[in-house]
Length: 414
Image (tube, rainbow, N blue to C red; front, top):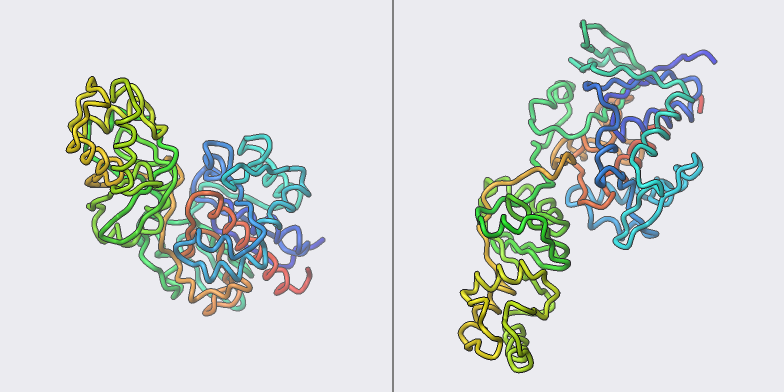
């Protein structure tokens, strides 16, 4: 079939690919081209979930997902009703990729290998004739008749006319990287990191690298924000789901604080300092060995010894000899352990940003610019970001599919 319309997708990540392959599938008369500035396609898909790819998050109700989007949840409500996690599951299953749900709701391919997702999408691109040009940068976009003249650069500079453009270039660390978009007259919300771990200068803590606490509450008193969940000790400070979620919700505020702030950790959030003190008094009565030998909170022995040392308690002291003053100190450390955070570390290679294209300028029913007909957006390039758990990929799938459908309808040949 003759291809009488062209769609140019800027970005070879999850959102760009999903838009491209579905637009090509739904609209046979559409020539679809992906340009990617690097030599790697679907790079975040590759590293997500430790190389397993956290495809989406299991939920039968859209409203149950909205808490996971610190920025853009009202926009996401409209997009998730159009393409939900259930639709994502069905889409992949129809192409021979089964997904499994883990206890925390995260969904992965049953192969436990992100390459399964990559291969599926590359096969779709091949099946529907999607053209891919890597190491190709976008220099400028100019409105031209009912389409766009896009200046591109690889080994040389050249122009491409496209009837439709979908910008799915992902998040950028610096606002200057959005210049090719802002020059079209699109408003950009300045980007800040939104998924990072907390740097803490404490060599005794760093020595516990790899130790995790199954459930703890991390609080930023200055912002009156907290998150509860697993915490992981690293060689630079604290990480794990509760820290990462907190970094996401507090992203803009922490940027304004220059990542210099205090946190309070409750290592046993079933207790507060008062109830913990009573618990420790009971333990003193019933425990017969040394205080270092056993703890009643399921903490690792190394971490328990760290907390005892921090409470100025001798490890060889018998439980029965613990004075009231030491019990008070230990209850404070267990339920109100204070740390000074100075700096952040990006979480592995899964860089996520808050900021990007102002979503007030985008129609959630089509992902089309309200200012420029035929200009569409998908994925993290918009000022929408989710916490860890598959939410960012679901945003990529939803926005990519909505844009693909809308472009098909506009072309009149779906």
